[in-house]
Amino acid sequence: FCTETIPGVKVLPCSIESRSEGLPSATLLPDEPVAAFFTGGTSGTLKCAMLSNKALMTGVYNGIFSPGPSFYQKYYGLIPFSHIFGTVRNLLSCFQSGSQIRPCSDMSKIVHDLQEYRPTILVLIPALAAMLLNLSKLYGPSVFGGELKQIVTGGAPQPTEIARIFIEKFGIL
Image 1 (tube, rainbow, N blue to C red):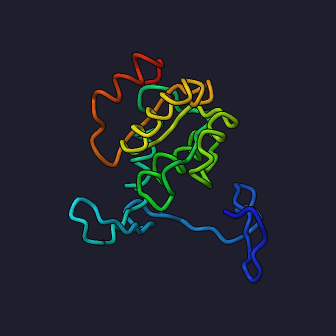
Image 2 (image 1 turned 120 degrees about the horizontal axis):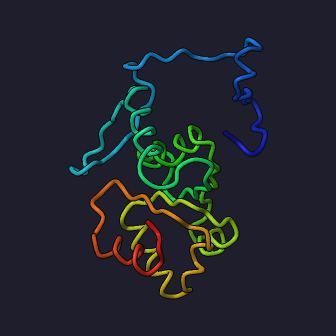
Image 3 (image 1 turned 135 degrees about the vertical axis):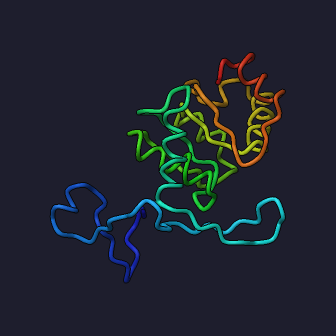
């Protein structure tokens, strides 16, 4: 995906129609590895996690068929797509659910972006959820853009107190 032409890089269309036009496409078997993520995990030692098509899609389906809104939503991508959780629950979930996603391009503009874009779902790691809670203390509940329905956290355990505040104070699941 790119927003501009890159010299020397051929950009192929990405649509159902492009398959019928004979452009390159791939047939993916469920257990074949399709993605490699480099992670420090809990040990801090860099390692490569190879995920199969089935593993990726199981994560996507678990996400979009979980309680709460999923289809035709507006996601704001704070977690990099190089992060497994960012790819599975943000990017791929959007593709499968007919949703939109706006990637965060500059963390210093997060307040402006949230208010302008007005996301309905945020996918976060717990540290980012805590950061947003602190921003709400500075800017009030309007910091979320006014349409936020759900926050999904992963990658580490979410402190119960932070989840409780989002639910009770802001009505965000």
